[in-house]
Length: 432
Image (tube, rainbow, N blue to C red; front, side, top):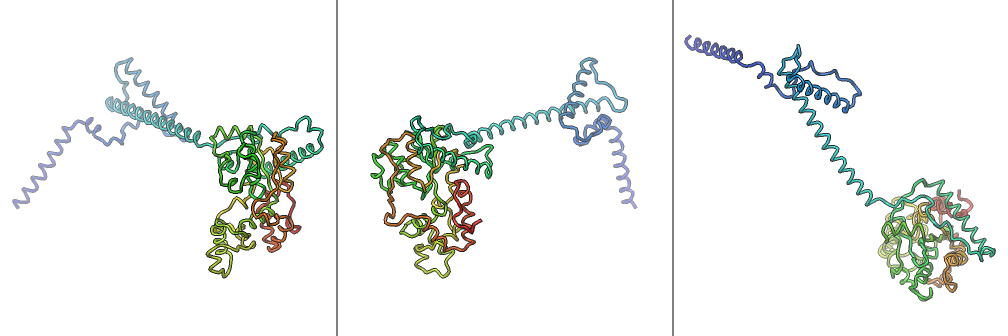
């Protein structure tokens, strides 16, 4: 009984103390002790509307704050409100001003960071950007005939042939390639050799007389007195000739716009068979272990250990299987790649387009146009496998006769752009 009375007395005393504490507490201090995120001045807020930008809201907030400051300066006291206590109104204005200042500072910081990021990106783009050149940037559409040559029917005929080849090439590019703006990177000019003395740029197309053309460039550059004095290994491994991608951006741009740019091409199937005969039908310490082993391993059924070990004896049909396979066991090689990809004729505006089939005539006409020494003519000799017969149309047809009609068609499709761009006719009647 006594314990119950004592417990009741303690509860009553505690309740009375709490009531006295609440009664003595200032109501304004209770408001300021609320959580900062909760606002009690709802009468000041405007209804929210859709599609109003943050800039408009910031401007309205800035205007209200400025008006409030002006009123204080004029009257020396804050304007009264019938619904909200004066101190609460002042606290809300201070809070609004602080929030606005913080938001404005944050926006300035974001703008500064954005500007710094933009400058960094712009510096990166300027440093890494490729060369932008218009479609017909070349200052030399074709070297003009000298006055004494204009009455020469041979030169006039060859000149018209060049104009027609360039026309077909440009029309093909316009039809199948986007040519409004073009981007030339060092990769696109990596196969172009430079001869500065006679201002010549030559794009190397393997199996289209490239070895002898390099000999001619070396003679033009004064590195040799005669093309006959230059050995095959000196031509390909001597590094005597400069490549266009070895120059800086300004050097590349200058030469593309002022030098005479030329390339020589060859009938695609004939060029392909010539490459196959050269690389796979003769001993070769690179193409046999690198390409031959991979081709035999993938496409030959019951291959012998010797063939798998050496990579020798690749058959033409196996080689074509490799060429047409989208998942090749080994990559592409320049000797059977597209001319369209080697020399980028839709990006680089070549001034002279020669053909292997009319090599002697075209080459000597080009040397005449650039003013080369009269005793310099294009060499006729074959310095590799000189005892073998040159790959001709007849030999090419014999190799392609080993393939099925489907393989021949797919091979034609593979080189279709080269056939179209350089105006070669279909090599077989059943192709479409």
